[in-house]
Image 1 (tube, rainbow, N blue to C red):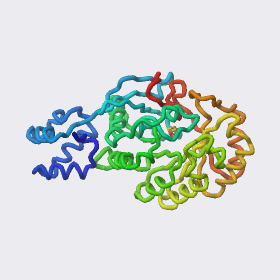
Image 2: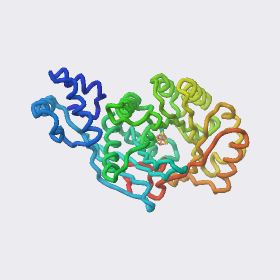
Image 3: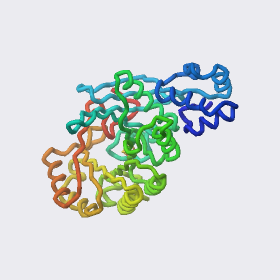
Image 4: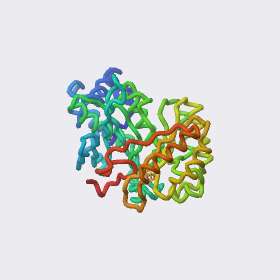
Length: 351
Ligand code: SF4
């Protein structure tokens, strides 16, 4: 069985040509796939019946995701879904909607997709990390998370504007499937989302960052740093051993040099762990002058014992970074009360 959502547009084209049909038949498959969201090959009536039958006989399918649970935040801006994928596994995907930040701007509908079920990185403050690793998602299952939300939004006259690979899992640990999904989602004959509207978030797998830099894509990169030195980082990200803070900063620098895309360092701020003025100064020293941006994320409540710092401490941390010349922002959290925010996704406790 091959899911049509797995195929790049040029692969769909090759498929129809190999089956003896004209090239234009590929677009008769691709256009409905990404704009009409059919659930079955027979839901594409413009395709000749013979071609639909031949595709089905050859084992081609359309593997949509099925929604098994939905939670919406009180303000209606965040929707978390538990989706059953075509292989029977379940994954969480989140939609976050934002008002325009400036006059004349457009509202944003950002989908936070998952690339794995569970995660092997074991970050101590992350609910997904505490689940352990279950499996890598296939490209078609990453794509179908986006398609599912695209269909929901289309019914409201809206559309997906941004995509962040920040859901369950470490995208670089499932590189080939992740990048195949990115190429399908950004292809102008596929889902057609602008490359600049996509951000990949990684715990800092240097080899993956370097590979991504070579893809010649204009994708944003977010690196989860969380600590300015290796000793503290290893306590928070136990698998960080082979990726030192210095290696990570260097791979971010190379990514910026190669792509021209600014790199964001994510910093989950935890009371009494990594929020002191001394640590802020150490972080500032590390990042000063390299053009990067720090996104401070006051930690969300998860199963662990970590606490969100007081607002005063968050502002002081931000002030020290700014005063040292490091660009930074404090993330506006969405969906905390429905456990849809960063580090809160897991498949067994939706709700
Ligand atoms: S924070 Fe990201 S990399 Fe770390 S355990 Fe959670 S999902 Fe994995």
